[in-house]
Each structure stands twice: as C-alpha cells, then as structure tokens.
Length: 210
Image 1: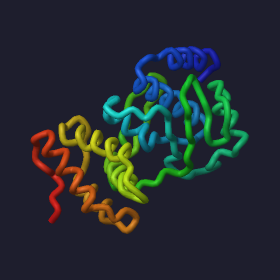
Image 2: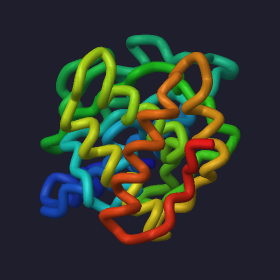
Image 3: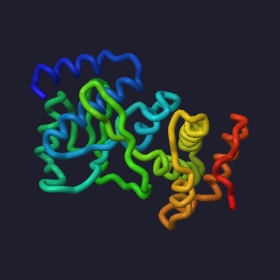
C-alpha cells in the first residue's frame, strides 16, 4: 500500500465517529500492512467482541495477535516499529497510539477452539476475528477469576446475547469442550451465565449442564 493510500485511510479512520467502525477500519489497515510483511494478524479480546456484536459492547482500543509462526516470524522490534510508523504510530514496541486509538500487539494468539477464525470485510482488506467460542470462555473466566469482574461479565453477556439471537454463529459443543478444558475449568459458570441470558431473551438455553 503506497504512502498516499495510507494517508487517505488514516484520515478516514481519524475522523470516523462510530467507535466500532473506527476499530474495524484500523484493524483492516493494520492487517493489510502487516500482511505485506508476511505476518497475519487477528483481532482478539474486547476488540473482537466489539466487532462481532457490532458495537453492543465497546472496547475503546484495538487488541491484535499474530495468527501463526512462519518464516521470519515474529517481526523484530525495529520492523514492528517500521510497520506501525507507516501509520504515524506513537509509542511501541507493543503498544501504540494511532489515529486516536490505542493499539496493542499481544504476541501469538491463544486459541483452543477447533472452529475457524471469523473473517470480516474491511475497507482496506479482510480482517480476521478471534473465534467466538474462545472469546466466550475467556470472558467468563475473567468474570470470575481471580475475583468478580463485572465489566467482563457484562461483556460475556453481550456476546452470549448476540449468539442466542442468531447474529453470530457459535458451536455450543465447542463452548462446552473448551469450558471443560484444564486451561479454563469454568463450565458451571458458563452454563449459569448462558441460562441467565436465555431467560432474559426468553429463548431456549443451548448449553445444558448435563
């Protein structure tokens, strides 16, 4: 992507008023520029939930991870600074501010789900989004350990809500499997929260405790 296109993209992102659209646009630009260096990125954490829920939950920043290791992986500190510098980034080498948003590069993605990453069309190229099954298990875990976290709980409920309403597809058998894994061990808590949201929406609970 040439300098002129990057500058135009940054202007569009900077003046975007919709927080979720801004997040997606910046993720699209970051992904495109890193892809040119042979590195594939995926949006994770609250940022991924924000995009999947179309703004029902707003993260306020952009969290990214590498998808996989390959030749020349990971990019060195100087190369990371060079790539982010193309977007006028301030900071580094893992946290930057770009177009009024904070961007964190968190390392290699941690995914236990067997489902594929979600793909969302962006204005400057496709954006990979973390798997909702991983996101759900992660948010439920953070909501209860090491202590009660109401923000994480609200975030998990937003994700569960859009899944139960059919706006986001998720494999509930995968949710069950992941929540029962030693890495999480939060299946009862997950069931409890899904039941709560299902009752609020007056829909069937797809995650039975048996």
